[in-house]
Amino acid sequence: MRQALYELTIHEALAGMRAGDFTAVELTQALIERITQVDSQVKAYLTLTVELALAQAEAADARRAAGDDAPLLGVPLAIKDVLCTEGVRTTCGSRILENFVPPYTATAVQRLADAGMVMLGKTNTDEFAMGSSTENSAYFTTRNPWDLTRVPGGSSGGSSAAVAAQEALAALGTDTGGSVRLPASYCGVVGLKPSYGRVSRYGLVAYGSSLDQIGVLAKDVRDAALILTVMAGHDPQDSTTMPTPVPDYGQALTGDVRGLRIGLPQEYFIAGVQPEVATAVHAAIDTLAALGAEVVPISLPNTDKALPVYYLVATAEASANLARFDGVRYGYSAGADSIQENYRMSRGQGFGAEVKRRIMLGAYALSAGYYDAYYLKAQQVRTLIKQDFERAFEQVDVIACPVAPTTAFRIGEKADDPLAMYLSDVFTITLNLAGMCGISVPCGFDHAGLPIGLQIMGPHLGEAVVLRTAHAYEQATAWHKRWPQPPIVEA
Image 1 (tube, rainbow, N blue to C red):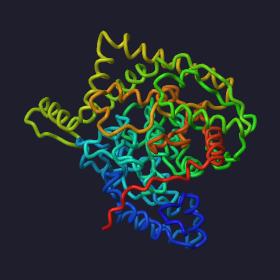
Image 2: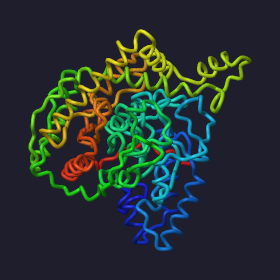
Image 3: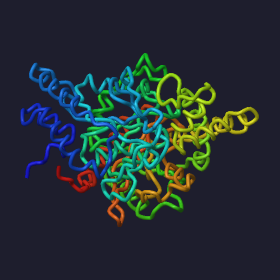
Image 4: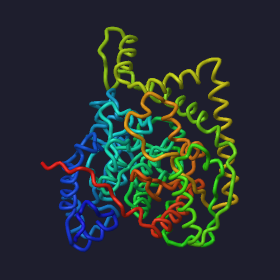
């Protein structure tokens, strides 16, 4: 039986369009129909751009007919709603930006557009990317396509759910403390977090400026490599981007990991990890060993300090970054009589509870008398965490471990316990603190049929070896070929 067009990977779709089997318009229409059928249940999208998508698809077909063969020509993708898109509203999942329409497009998005992307719409997110479940969106909770009573992870839950439910061929997300890798693990898709400085953050609405990175949610590793190749590279608009050349990451996908040294960090296999998660991850590492990789026990001794360090650094940066939302220049304004009262009411009414919590935590950590004790100390310990990774990568090429301690939890299960929610990120935040790269790739399912992710970490600008390892594992297994079947609602 022929695959439905929405089921294709990017590389399969490109091959079909190049061969003349179908057009970009037909592919886009298939995705729009799929969204119509399942998104009322999954709720992955905040904003759909149907007219724009069809116009871009027509333009892609015209470009192809004229001999153009851009790397993403006619490929329908979704964009997390924290990335600015000119002429298309960007809400950040917040009421304070409910009607904000940016006058410019984020560099990463623009590079995909220049490569021929068709934009299907903007995906749901925890408010200002602050959360691990997409329950903090001001609009609605996105649901996990494998089980609609479960969270999809966060904060890129809309993007991961859109890919898992096959409502987009791939999607952009952002990762400040695991917000690409965690939802990828929960939804059974590939989630790539590049190194800090590998992809421009220009046009990304900032949460934690020293931690944020734009990443990819995709159906397989080859698609993730393709999108990274297109969007990575130096950007004069972002002084933190690296001036180093961007390789063709697809060429790293050799399927060969013979002689590769894989580190096994003892601190990531601890009490509290769901047994099925530990079993699946160990089995995945055994598969890599059977392919010829060498497994090396290592230690990352400051791992236990990562959670408090992250929630001091991230909240401090958030409190500074979100100060700009004042009800004066753009976004929601309460319209109070005095400027002081307008600030108070606009921010009080516009921000949700989790954003307020993090602003207050960050403001406290940066306040007079507490800066040295909290923020400065956290930055010093952050350096120790980074040094742990640097020493580890002198011994090994990549590090393998779980993405999360458990599979996807039920909606509402952790809503009243912020600390329990924060613990979901315990295995992902270290990479953001260290500025290094990592990927989540499907490696199994638990007894409830929920996906489990294997995390492969690499050194700064080590995306090629991370992708190579993930691809070799993916091709040796069949986990990436299993897809959920969310309920279809007939129009």
